[in-house]
Length: 413
Ligand code: GLU
Image (cartoon, rainbow, N blue to C red; front, side):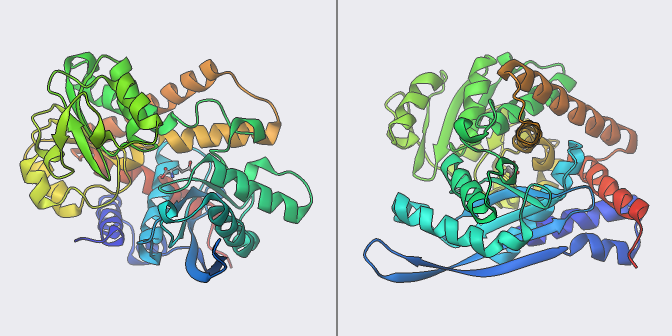
């Protein structure tokens, strides 16, 4: 399998070629500015001590503080975190929020641990990386395996150590401690804005299409909700345990209620089983990968029947998969644009927390829509003008904004 870092570096190389940058600048852009590796020992509820590894990578901070999620998964490694941090850099630049890119990870499968254990791991990890995080340095958010509660623990640990409450150190927090309205649903909502914009370019409305969503977590479940609201027929969804399909359209509200009980989508009674492999080859118009990296390789891409692939996940398509999709004329709305709604509302949350002044959900929804459509418009225009794929256009815009900030600031000393 092509690793996430291989994919991220190949994408950067393609952008650098389009932009005509020197090998020295290319190497700077490819290399994380700063990274911290920490040991995260945990006392289990049984008294046993187990050791996890933790990482925080700040890929680039030329445009502002590092920004990016914290991932808990047994398979996390430093190269994956480096790739995810690099994607955050381009993502923040594409939607023009004043951040660099960062990412964190801990080698832990949260499903195997109690809440008390997860709290201890989170607090220990946070205290280990304290020197490099903060509302002006590096701001965390949820990612795979972490949630609002994790962000509250990070914020509390950081604040208690400094002696006062600093809500701006994390985003994606619970509302009572400085979270923002609309943050929890923002990534999925942004994915649907991106899909709507891409379809509109071909004169198609979301209400006319059939969609499949791979992944039903913080991104996929909300994407399915907003697609359903827009009148799209959602015909299949999967999560880690399997999936469900109904060619007449799944009853998305009933499915969301089913999942809210803690059940997998695969045990939903309103559909028939579908696997995580099969979902890619279904006869749908719109496919939304919203789980993990590397799922669309050359093989998977060959079987895709959708006309549009809108990437809710980070890095779901390998460079080989991308080439096959391009050859087959399938439109790909790339991750750094399509899933940027999360970090856009993270930015809104940080602005609100720093000003201690809160916006209404209508203001947030409107500003998110405006930013997603503006970013899509700029990317689509570059793609048209320079005959590029949407991915190359988005990367070229993101990489250029970062390089420009770096060049204006100058190389020190
Ligand atoms: N983890 C999310 C992402 O990959 C959100 C990052 C953020 O809001 O900082 O985009």
